[in-house]
Length: 371
Ligand SMILES: Cc1cc2nc3c(=O)[nH]c(=O)nc-3n(C[C@H](O)[C@H](O)[C@H](O)COP(=O)(O)OP(=O)(O)OC[C@H]3O[C@@H](n4cnc5c(N)ncnc54)[C@H](O)[C@@H]3O)c2cc1C
Image (cartoon, rainbow, N blue to C red; front, side):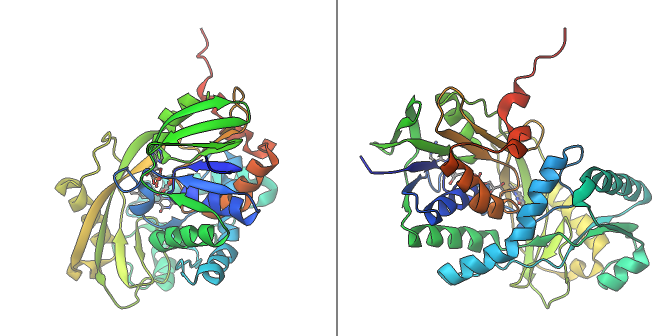
């Protein structure tokens, strides 16, 4: 049995961000990860560090997301210093493009709501006319009706981010065990025996960070984590000259030059394949938005599964039945990577989650409908 302070179950973006944060705080941490055969959102996502769609009606989520986005640049610099792996993070601001007046009006209302709900935190945004948008991004097409802009948005390369987090974890003395699918947890308060890959590991604390695996693991430690898969399909083009100077919600140019076009939202169970209809719809919208894409060669498309809670918010909680067992899961693991490493890890060490995360507890799933 290893000598561990914390076992982190799952080695995607969420698990490694928390594990790195723990190791940096001097904790003896071991990540147990099922590995390549599992569904892994961290390897199939769109790479936005995105604020402007987050937290309608839930200002706590907007604040948490904004805070993570504010910390991302330092976080990225730190990973580069620690590991020499560049995350590719940039924060030039971002736009959500609307193709007709109805979309634009819906967007305007949403941005107003975010602004009002931000209160003291404030939330700067602009609604852009086609002409103003064209000044900002000259490649925009004539069919675009307008866009919303905030300075808080950015993007990163999620694969390099994951690689950097793994390297930084190891550098701080953390350990990573692949091919270690957790099949059972023998739980007592502050004492956990975890069976994985034919071995048993022990620690006084565990963090459930297994993405779609969290539902099954949660049941082993008294936590109700009703996450489900929501598929997204993405298209990527050949490398092109720099043409998009900021990310949009559905189209972005990577630092390497490829253009990523995404992303659908589909209830498809655990099917992570692609479908011609969706790829066609995505491509059509992309060409309307940026006509130059008509001539771009597509090099790949793929499907991947989001880790979605019933209300789309993260799930953060310590088990009341088995204190020492925490769950950390969300559908924006790139955006929230800085918050997970810088803050969630500290809360695990302190042994309690702060009141500002109470809105994300599983209590919200246990509310009974009124008779
Ligand atoms: C199409 C798409 C686009 C997205 N775009 C964005 C975006 O632009 N910006 C953003 O912030 N987020 C985005 N996301 C979401 C983001 O990818 C996820 O929030 C994030 O990757 C979740 O990371 P995770 O570590 O929780 O899960 P995963 O990446 O799924 O990792 C879970 C890990 O747990 C392991 N595991 C599972 N079960 C067990 C078990 N029983 N025992 C041990 N290990 C186990 C798996 O092997 C895996 O390594 C997108 C997701 C998708 C699918």
